Amino acid sequence: MANIINIMTAAGAPLLMRIISSSVAVANRAANIIRDIMKKGELGIVEKEGKHDLQTEADRSAQRCIVASLHKQFPNVPVIGEEDLDTQDLPADFLELSFDEDVLKCVCPDQYKDVKEEDIVIWVDPVDGTAEYTQGLLDHVTTLIGISVKGVAKAGAYGFERKNPPQGQNIITTTRSHSDEIITQSVEACKPTEILRVGGAGHKVLLLIEGKVHAYVFASPGCKKWDTCAPEAILHTIGGKLTDMHEKCMKLQMVEKNEQVT
Image (tube, rainbow, N blue to C red):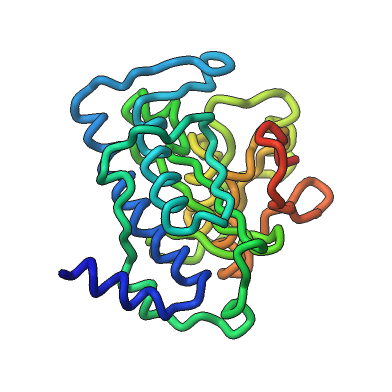
């Protein structure tokens, strides 16, 4: 009964709020799938393009759950996931319609009340930080669902407590497993007092959002749109920005899946 009431309440909400609400709900379901697979210990690891580019059963199952659920609810909105997977013959609970009530209670800003389906793309990284997931470094792992409107990151879901970064320091976070000479030189040029090398693009942006670091530096191609959309949207709300070396902000238009964010 609670779910029926929830769906009826959602029906009167603006499209963008319904998508955010559904994204939060399905992200929580996906997180439970990821935890259950870890507990069972049957990770089903395969290499996609090398030892640092892995896929696990958690990636596959979580993405199928997220994409199938969002596509069923919003069939005309593109949902682009990191993994190249089919969504045939899925368990019934993967197709469950659900909404987060706290999101539905929020007031939609006037400028987004009439956003159309054709203006929206949903970007999904089911397990951001897969390599760290396989090593049991679960604090590096996030499930990212980002929503772009006309090519600009506008929404993402993450619970956090914002604090100011430590004064008198310059803490930089960067990649844990994809470093090279250019990245090292770029980080050192920032004259850091401390360097945090951690996994997961989403995790590193969230460290910045939470005020645990002063900047995230990754002077290399490699991040994808599903890595950055959700955390970028939240970063904007606290006055931060995600740019390239020339301070050019990234666009999140629907493009070929192998295109990189530079």
